[in-house]
Each structure stands twice: as structure tokens, then as C-alpha cells.
Image (cartoon, rainbow, N blue to C red):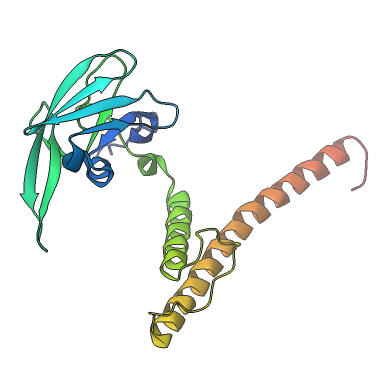
Length: 205
């Protein structure tokens, strides 16, 4: 029987490292203003300066600088999209920072995604929740599944509103059913453990 390679669950994940996202820099105005302070929770601030086709990245704490090249691609619906160019030559929307290393692409940093370590069951649960949250946002509601869905937005047709609402009810039903199976099974296991301990102690539960 051939040996099947499996992805290790101990791989370092993208979500665990400070990242530079060129899409966020675009939204935040780096290409309009030429400089930007890039902040993230629990991470050091970065001072970014645009100089031609290069972004100068300077740490606000260590004052170390790194030059990151940019490239641009034409978008299908018009306009241009910016990309970082990693030192390896790969084009990337995000660069990551590992301790003692410069910013580099995910491949050079040998990083995986959180979702790659998920079990099939966890992946289904996450996808079901994300679908429900996206539908709620399209209907003008908060992503929190316990919050009410507002009335039909003025610019949305009745047919579209009720179609999205039906999809949302179906998606939320799946999320709650998964949660019930997960926590119901856990509670049943706890009850069985307690019963076993009670019997071993001579108690009747």
C-alpha cells in the first residue's frame, strides 16, 4: 500500500504572524498619500513610504528598513491591481514576518492556513457559519446569528429579499443543528462519565 503524505498539524500558520496586506494598503490610501502608518493589534507599528515602484517598510520600534518591490496587473473590469514582489520573485497580496527574518511570501515563510489543520467536521461547521453570516450582511443584518434580521432594504426587490431570507433560514438551521449535535453529544458524554463515576462510588444517578 503506497504511503500517503499528510499535512502536519503543527505547521506554523499565517494567522500567527504579522502581515502586510497590499489590499489594505490600497484601501488605506498608501498610493494616494505616499506614506502610511500600518497598525495591528498586539503587533509593532510599521511606517510605510511609497517611492516609485517600491515600498519602504520601517519598524517604528527597531527602525529597521526593508525595500519591497511592487508590480501591477490589469483587472478584468478596468483599473490596475497592486501586488508585492517577494525576494523569491513570487507575486503576493500578503507578506509575512517571521522572527529575525524580513517580510516574505507565505511559501518562503513555510506557513500554512488555519483551515488546513481543520477536521472535515470543523470545516463544514465553519463554512456553514460563514455562509449564514454573509447572507445576513447581504440582507443588511449583523453577522451575529442571534440578532434580528431587519425589514427589506428599500432598493432590494421583494423576490430577492425573500429568496435571500429563505437561504438564510436554511443556512442558520444547519448551523444550529451542527451546534446541537456537537454540544448535545458532549453533554451526553459528560452524563455517561458522571454515571460511571457514580456507579463506581456506589451511588445511583
